[in-house]
Amino acid sequence: MEMWVDADACPKVIKEILYRAAQRVKIPLTLVANHPLQVPRSPLIRSLQVAAGFDVADNYLAQHCSPGDIVVTADIPLAAELVARGVTAINPRGEHYTEENVRQRLAMRDFMQQMRDNGQLGGGPPPLDNTARQSFANTLDRLLAKNLHCT
Image 1 (cartoon, rainbow, N blue to C red):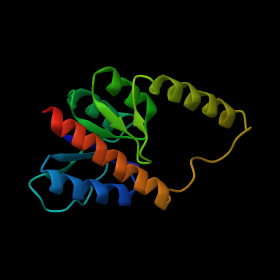
Image 2 (cartoon, rainbow, N blue to C red):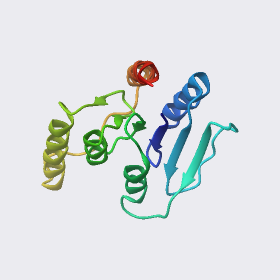
Image 3 (tube, helix red, strand yellow):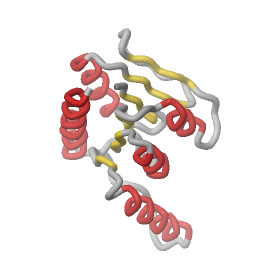
Image 4 (cartoon, rainbow, N blue to C red):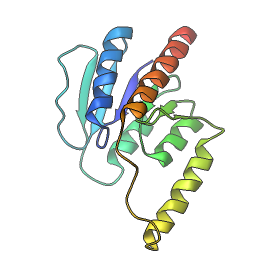
């Protein structure tokens, strides 16, 4: 089992939670981004810079993650693809994507994008608050415990 991060838009506070979790449970963590990242010195933590471009990091993750891995991403189409392959996906707000909910999230994402494109809706998600951070940490802990128990 490994942990992966779609790191281009992942908040710093979430990365810090992931660094601590990787050290605590002794599993590899790879942050994938199209720009250089500073990560703590650890044999368990690495950053991987991919070429710039639309969905390059997402495509890398889709090709290199395996069932049983945990991927942190806010990209719902990527999450849908990963979940279909048996990869565990969560977003930085702590939502665990499952076969039961990811299609609905994808449809809602598409609907909201149409609303924004038509000028009927503005802005993006609200800022990451303490409740979202705690939700992420709790969800990650549950998933790590479950996945470590299954290996």
